[in-house]
Length: 193
Image (tube, rainbow, N blue to C red; front, side):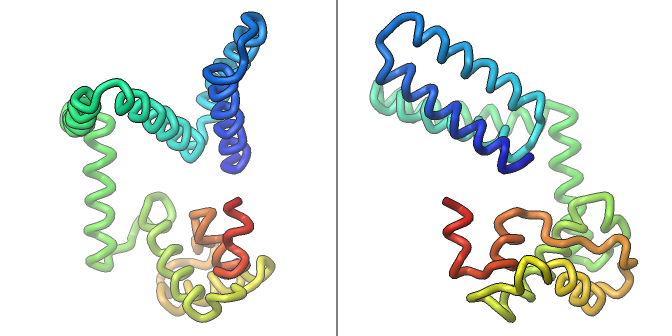
């Protein structure tokens, strides 16, 4: 779903560009706008974090570009307001506050070596990143091969984290890290494009 959601974000970007800069016929603009709104709704129903974050980053960049062209003062004020809003949200929105506190707690526990909740939390991801980093250092140029990602990850998992049962070991839980591990740094740019 991650790649699919990124394709949807790319299509939304193209629709926005066509509606705002290229299409002059009224009905075409309406049709493309409705298509874009449908895709935005679908993206939120799909609920892929990567796609949603990419969408809102795109919206943020477009808004900042618009504000920069309109007024430098208003642009700077918007940046300050955005930072203030994020900080206030973390403090006063209970779900966001607890999520941030829990992530901080997990990172602290991971740094101490206490990894009891490795399969149900972010600690498992951190461990998979650490294992992937070690494996990437061994074969950085060509990677380990997509067929061996699981095998090499699980083997090193057993060495670095022997207390983690085999059924709870993870491959890298990040698409970019996974691809670098599989095909190496040399081929990685092809997958990004």
